[in-house]
Image (tube, rainbow, N blue to C red):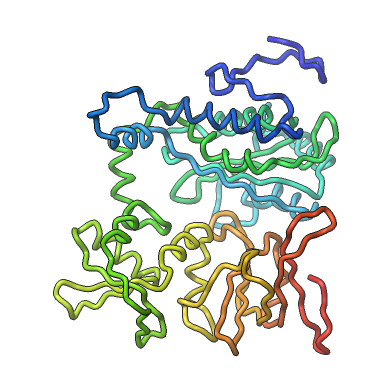
Length: 418
């Protein structure tokens, strides 16, 4: 035990992951990258290294040991409107907005398993426009969510140096039980505006997985085998797709079929597992099976591997491809900094709800050129944006940061900042 230098409260000495690793109190300094580099190396050493082996031993053993660590999804989003902050706290986390959920989740935090109303009101009184949301979903349902979230916040405070005001709730209305964590955007002690470094955001999944491993031990052989059986149906890029890339035959020039899509390669399934995987790619629309051939031949869409990775990042990407108005599915790309300025009509809009739609986005199509882009907007766009003519570009703002600029075009051709 020791006294906190700021609050004067007695606090427990907490070794990071119980391994004696103590990240610096403040990492938001000019030396932050060095400190995070050290921390990443230490994490890698603790959880992902193999014991020394004889040179004759197979390298595959390392992959098995890595697979034994518990898996846990930990995704972060942020908002910049107080109205949305309070709406998320009162209605979404408690699922008051879902009539089908009869047993409403109770908010918890570092002190209470069920936060009393006066504490919720206290949080609301200090709530800011800026807020952060984490979805924490362990693979194993044996992991208790409240201790996991509390340990996660504890580590987050140690990695960033901030003191968080936070609320969380468990959700059990989906296949996998998970927790939603809400962080206020202002340090509860110093009043400083919180900015979570990219390095910490990237480490969230590793941190959460390591905490789960500490709580219930390493994954069992049954867990690993069950995960392998789920791979052919995964809606993301997997190691099975590495095998497909290895065995497919690339066409000298893309083949355009009667469905309007262009295909870059073909393959015959080597085994039942590959056949299942190719069937999943067909369901997602990035492959096509020609069953008239014996054995069946599968065509793979142009840049299918990249598109599959986009499907993994954005769970509405498949739906966006299917609902394109003026061009074929193969032409949809993700808009990024390298794309350059683009003008078109907004034909689709997606609004994040954290469980079914993971991000805010729009789809912009140019009928004349046949181009279409999936644009992650970060902030929720207005409902009336569908049908608008807009211009897209990335520009440097007054803080020197490159950000997305979206301009709606008025009826007279004048630009209207969005």
